[in-house]
Structure formats: C-alpha cells, structure tokens
Length: 107
Picture 1 (cartoon, rainbow, N blue to C red):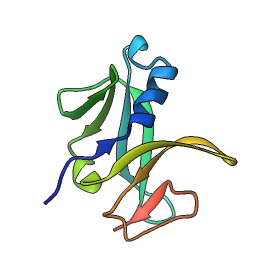
Picture 2 (cartoon, one colour):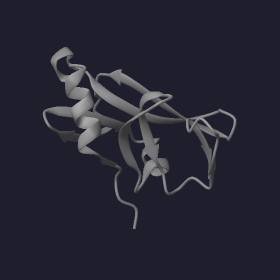
Picture 3 (cartoon, helix red, strand yellow):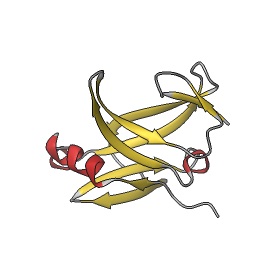
Picture 4 (tube, rainbow, N blue to C red):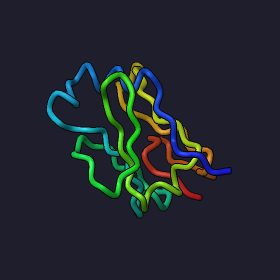
C-alpha cells in the first residue's frame, strides 16, 4: 500500500528555526529526471499550490507535487546534522540505488 511521505519532527523543527512559515513558505520536495542515478530530489522553500499534497506539523508545511508523489510513497523526509554538513534528506524505500551524495536515485 502506498502511503504519503512522512515528515520527521526534526525536519519541522528546522523549518521553524529558519522561519519558513513566517515568510509564507513551505519546504517543497520534488523528484525530477536527471542526476547521476536517473532521478534527483529538488528541495527548496516555495509557496504551496492547489496541486500539492500538504503535510503540516509544528506550524510548518512541507509540500509535494502530484507528479512527484508516486516516487515518494512511503518515504521519510528528515533533517540531519553531520560533520559534512546539515541538510534535509529523503529516506526513500522506492529507490533501488542512490548516489553517494544522496541527492539522486534510481528505481
């Protein structure tokens, strides 16, 4: 069964820290063709549209467009801080492989 992506509390907390909602923005997570593995994630602050799946928590919003949604079924959108840097990450069970940087994947 394909469920919509989930957003961790860490991801919503980070959006709150950067003031996304205060600026009228949401975190947009999209999938586009390209990257070294065939598909790549596009993550940006953007306004929601009528076509988006809207995920909310802690007063913040994450949106996924209808074209990207099947690629992100059952995925987890998280925020991580590591020695190499801090970033939003996607844990995607649909990906059969991904590149070393984690921004592109294949299915």
